[in-house]
Length: 173
Image (cartoon, rainbow, N blue to C red):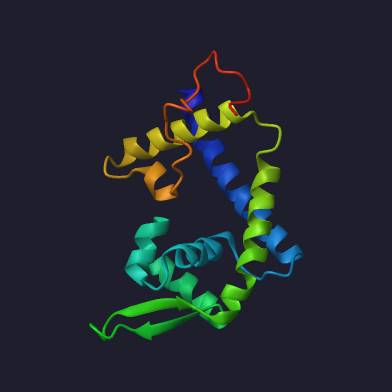
């Protein structure tokens, strides 16, 4: 029972601390965005123009939260709303030229921040961690494929890169 409680507490603490850390790193590098806003922009960089609902589905946030994220990004000149020509009731979200200009810089900062967070953690432990998180997400919702949503085909087991077991060395490559 104590272990179960620790899992919940640690998931929450690490999630919140990671968001605070990345927000601070973004600010230090002159990017006035939150990690959640970065996820919206990253989805748009990867997929192009999207509806608010598509963004919500892509980043696994409710539509109301996405509206607030888009409002903030719009105020910062990073996205703009465009009426869907096929359905004028529907807003499409597209990145501004400024958002495209900062893409490489802000993405590099984000990746460097995550690399710092996971430094000194052996790769086989990272694979196990991702597999465990994916299973936890699946337990909460069978229609959620966390690995697919993350777009990380590298985590999935392949013949050339099997997922580790207890005998797998620290380095896989």
